[in-house]
Image (cartoon, rainbow, N blue to C red; front, side, top):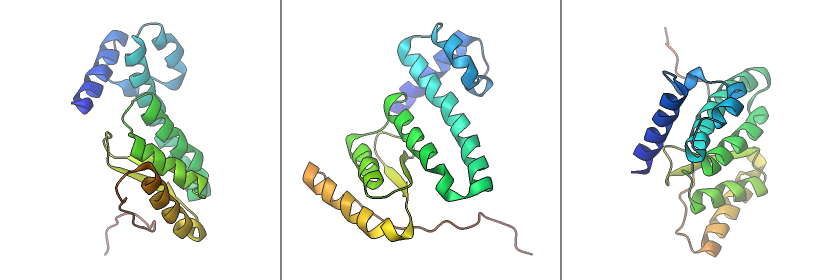
Length: 161
């Protein structure tokens, strides 16, 4: 339901702006778009446009400076999903906020929204403390035990000769 509604709202934005896709709209075009769109549709469009920009900025930052450079982009992505696209949940918001307070470089929900998972980019020295902080915060809020797991970033898939 919610996913279909978000898609319909984005399609309404595309139609109202006379575009073929929201990727045809840049961040610099958002002020003019706001005058032509319903406030809810505008927030959906703004999320997509700014998220597209964040993806490109993340790729550039990773290539230039490595993982620590993307913390703010992860945080901004979560805020946009929470506030503009409205697909986060109180549990995901708590996980993200708690991870950030416990030393995460950046954090965001991930997946299609309306529940699911959050990711937190942490220095290795903060993993245990952040994991415990999230467990404690969930218990204090009356939420079920979160499933937590640690992954390490590695190079992407590649052809092996």
